[in-house]
Length: 310
Image (cartoon, rainbow, N blue to C red; front, side, top):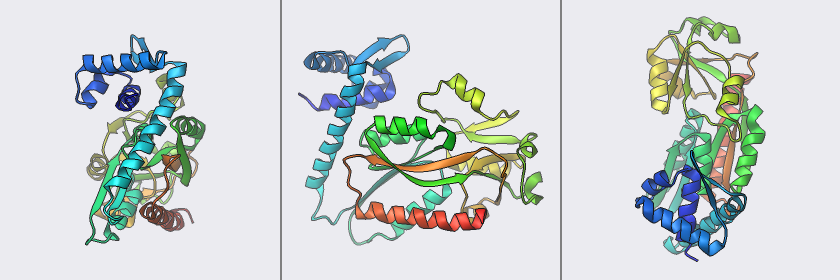
């Protein structure tokens, strides 16, 4: 059986579209369709059901894809063994949310590396679902997933479905971030209703597993004005320049606040508790670099908790 076809099937599941998967795989759509058909014929059952909205795994296909991802992860681990140069290569890969404290820990990790030895470092900022799929598909070894605590069961079920381990990094009360010149900057603490007249900046790719978009909208906090962004730099620039805007975030480092002339305030009566969760393949063994990074995250959590919540 051609294990390359496993990669094709996993990509089709991730995209929900053979056309998009073919584009991502740099191959013609008819060739990908033929490969998926050959894989289904060899397995003796349909892996995907074709619908008007794309393709979705069948019940048996869903089970097959769990095994396929596991096999691909193990193959990648075996390939990495043969590509090491006497274990001197410093390897680290991370898919993460747009979060200042995580970015700073990553920078500290890179700064601690042996500059005289070769390194293979990869990082990507992505939404929670993209991060889970990045790690499940073997594109990154580690991921950090951010979600509201009330949706923890949804995300943990999805993480387990992808054959990943999950370890909690931090559960925290979201803070309100805005410009030093914002009208609320003179307040030491806020109430949710204080934010009603102002424009909320939020990431536009927040999808919750197993929760229909209509249900998401009903459970979301109503707000009159919103700006949706898809990158951290755009978020920080907007907060710095649009002086009546704000955003719910994890605690930011003092360096980041100074750089963009921002301040953070608590809003203790809000229901916005978030969780940052580390994910990695169930068959993956954490490396020394991975553990060093986790230690940096733990130290940052302790420092920021004392600064903002004590």
